[in-house]
Length: 240
Image 1 (cartoon, rainbow, N blue to C red):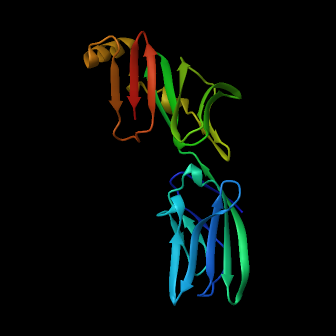
Image 2: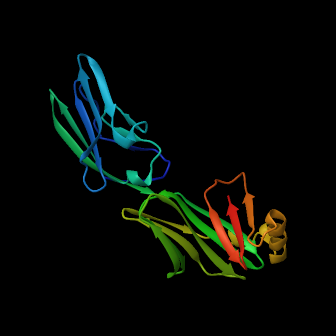
């Protein structure tokens, strides 16, 4: 049974069982390819229900003892994979069922306008084996990737007026996520326009050295995007 969720969301794996016997033993297993790692063990012992949550899922799982359903909170990309439950009971035959969860990326698009060019940054946080790519229509413009758990950012420069369709695609071995760039939202807001002269002035006032850093913080945005724009030995860091 395939399920889909975003990073940070909550998903419940429903067994479809009405009510289990109080003495039932319930096990949940997980694995990226095969469900072979025990993440929940629950059973009755001397009249007391003992439920143990295991591994990196601790603190994010909740088992419904009546139905055997499992809730996974605060999803991460690494939660993508196969889940299986096993139920044993004195008056119940052994039951089992397989679930598949695909966790999609939380993507972030941020932009800045400099002298007629629009610079857009696409970012994903805490992705493992993720590849980020910018497309114009079906044409791939650039990409970046990392085999490790890491934050990735990929910049794109759009010059002048543009009616093309741009999209940022994030993929890993089990899922993919596409975000369409809205030119109107990100590249036509003159309240965010600055000229190269203003950029130079801000850089000199900020550092008074040949290589200057400007940090612009938007407190209403999530701190998830860092963009470096290099022009004649000047570096512009934009943090949202």
